[in-house]
Amino acid sequence: MTFLEEILAQKAIEVAAMPLEKVAEKRKTYSFYEFLKANMSEMQLIAEVKRASPSKGEINMGVNPVAQAKSYQAAGAGMISVLTDPVFFKGSIEDLREVAKNVEIPVLCKDFIISEKQLIRARNAGATVVLLIVSALAEDALKNLFEQAVTLDLEVLVEVHNREELAVAQQLGAKLIGVNNRNLHSFEVDIAVSEQLANDFSTDACYISESGFRTAEDVARVRTKYNAVLVGEALMREETPEVAAKRLKVTR
Image 1 (cartoon, rainbow, N blue to C red):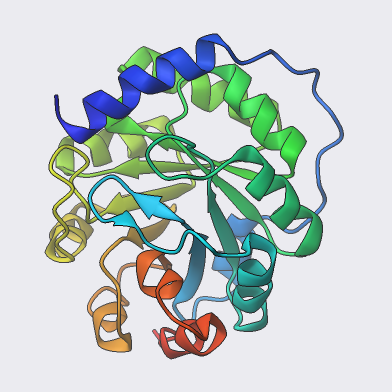
Image 2 (tube, helix red, strand yellow; image 1 turned 120 degrees about the vertical axis):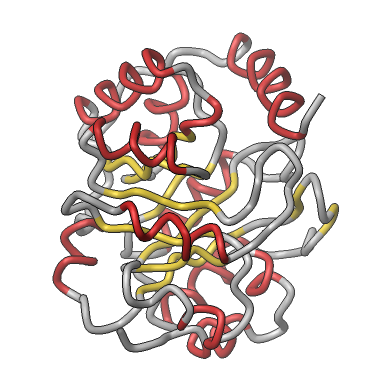
């Protein structure tokens, strides 16, 4: 199986055992889409709390998620992304819950979402943005989950990897579209993916380039067509994440 197939098989087992929570009060913060639209002069940063990955193994198992997130916020990140997958990324919903309690900015639940159960759980834990991955979902399932998330007053980052998936996300009406430079089947990374897909942007969505960014020069490659970058591993390996995050801020 590819990485994605293996992850989705495990996720189905995890979700089957997950209780359906009652919808609780939503955490208050700003709209990430509106934030991006209001701050167009600079590339914005989504900074990620990520302990491990299937391709790289352990990245920073000893991280204090709250301290890491506070460093990101102090560096001017517009949103914190928290990996909540326990098996392949060594994260947890508790990581997200604790981060959301201790920062003021939006928090993205980064997981392989296949069920409304996960949407409600993410919202109850303090996420105001959720990730839906086009390559992980049949088109009907994607549409249903997108509509359920909107009904729950969650913003949705719809992730794509190629032109066909980009067309699906744009037709869906997604306001936040992420282009992942990492192939989820092979886990190879190439920023050129974002450069190539930028030619097909056709909506008023805010576009986010994800994965592979280590320097300001990397970020500069996508600054003309993208509003933000999502960075995880490069920040998680730094002893001073606040300094590292500030280094990635680039004017548009």
